[in-house]
Image 1 (cartoon, rainbow, N blue to C red):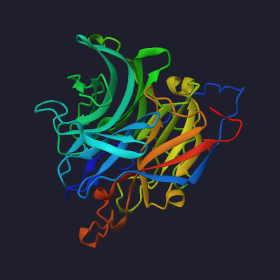
Image 2 (cartoon, rainbow, N blue to C red; image 1 turned 60 degrees about the horizontal axis):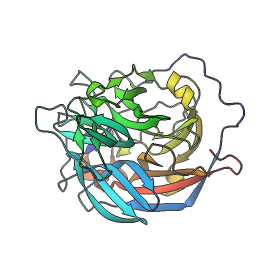
Image 3 (cartoon, one colour; image 1 turned 60 degrees about the vertical axis):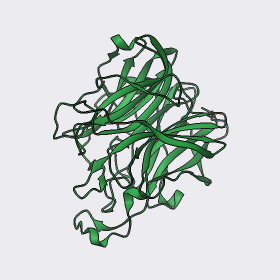
Image 4 (cartoon, rainbow, N blue to C red; image 1 turned 90 degrees about the vertical axis):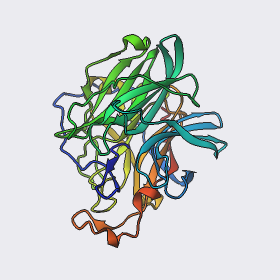
Length: 379
C-alpha cells in the first residue's frame, strides 16, 4: 500500500484523495520503432496466493520469482487483531506456501521507525555496507506514531531473500511534519548496468498527493547518495470513473528490454462505503524509462483490475511479479499480485460501525491475475 492510515476506532484507513501536482513539461519522444504494446487480460488466470489466518491482514506485496520459487514481502500484523505493522516474508514453492514469518519490525523508540514497518520493496544488487557486501535491499515505510502520519522511507540489507535484514539507521526520504502523512509507499528497481544504483519511487502526501523518483547510489552505503527527486507525470492516467487520475500507491517494474517502466497503481476516486480508504481497482500503465527519469511524457493505460475482472468489491495495494533486479519475469506478459477486500456499510458520511457486515481490514488477502502482450508485441 501503501498509505496504511489508522481510523480512530482501530480500523485501518488509507489516505483520502488529495490534489494533483501536474507537470507542464513536454514529453520525451517515445521509441517510434515499436508501437506501444497492448495487454490482453485473462480472467481465468485469477488465483489465490496467500490467505492470512483470521484476525490478520496482508497487503502491499513485493514479489520476486525465480523458477518455481516466489518470495513475497507484505505489510502484515503480527498479533491477532492488533494494527501494528510488520513486514512478513511468505515463501511459495510450486504455488504452495512453505513459510510465512515476520522479517522486519519496528525499531526500539525513539527511532524514526519505532511504530510501523510497512510497504516493502525488495531488489537485488551489490550493496557494500560496513564489512559486508549485501545482495538485497529492502526499502520500506516506517513511522514513530500510532497514526497515519510522519511516514518516512528507509532501507535494510540482506545477503539472501530469507534475511536476516540489517537496517540502515536513518531514513533516506524524510518528512519533518508530524501532522502530515509524509513519504512512503516505496518501490525500487535496479538501474540497468549499475548494480549498486536503484531507482526509488515513492509517494509524498502533505498539501497534495504526488509521486517522485530518485536515484539512490548504494554501492557504498556508508557514503550513499540520493539524487534530487523528479516529479512523476500523471498525464494519461485514468481513474475508475474514466476521469484524469493522480499517482500514489504504485509498484514499478522494468520491461525485459529495460526500455519501459510498467506500474500497477491505485485508482481513484475512493468509494463512499466501507472501506472508503482504498481504491476499488488498480490500473497497469506503461511509460518509457527515459520519460520517467525526465519527469515527462504520457502514460499508456494497459488495463484495469476491477470487480468486473475479478469479482471482488475492492482490488487494491498491488505488486508486479518481478525478477530480483525488478524486471518483469516474462517477456510475454504481466502478472499482478493484488489485495482484495469485502465491502459494506457504513459510509464515509455516516460512519455508524454498528451497520458493518464487512470486517474489511481482516479480509485483506492476496490474489494474482495475468495478461499477455498482443502477439508480435513482446516487450
